[in-house]
Image (tube, rainbow, N blue to C red):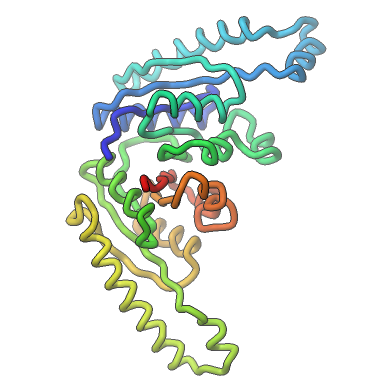
Length: 295
């Protein structure tokens, strides 16, 4: 999959600024088109609250004009930093849904967002726009956590050998040239706890771990050969709890981007909550690229 159209969403906060900057770097590397979106959602509650504070209502037209002016300043600064001048769009509606709808209608290849919005406490209380957007879009989503000081250098793709993991690895290779690409599979021995409960000794459990390791290595070798650019990947196998070991290995190799596949759009919400991905979204210091399967 070649990324030709990147969409970045901003609320003009510092995390959003980092996300747009990263999107511009990626667009510049691959010659992709970049669109920057800002959504205005003027609910009756917001209007009443502003009226009480300022003595007057806040119309959507006034907010639109202010956002347009702010977007112009924002993109001018972006062009000075990155030499990329994006197309800009002011949308109406709830931010996550408005951005998801626009990205779908524009057939974007990648959506880039910041990990948190302008109001971190509100994000924690009601769920951030980023997490809402992750549930709504069918495109790959890059969740930016760090201010980009340079292009990505070392990328870790967590794999379970599924079609979604294959799509994720192929996208990483297509999107990022001249970077180190690592594949990590964390395996668990079936019924390992039950073996201990049943009285199996350490040697017996270790025997099954070795069998699991050999099988995981075989699957990794076969999986790499199915990728579009197999020679670019370094495969690694670990045993244990997936989310903890993905984060641990990412720290070991100093990965600045984690990549993870999601089986289908309809499963993305389930993938994000109560799984490896939710831990990575919340705990990883690296940026996170979530890629839905194309099947």
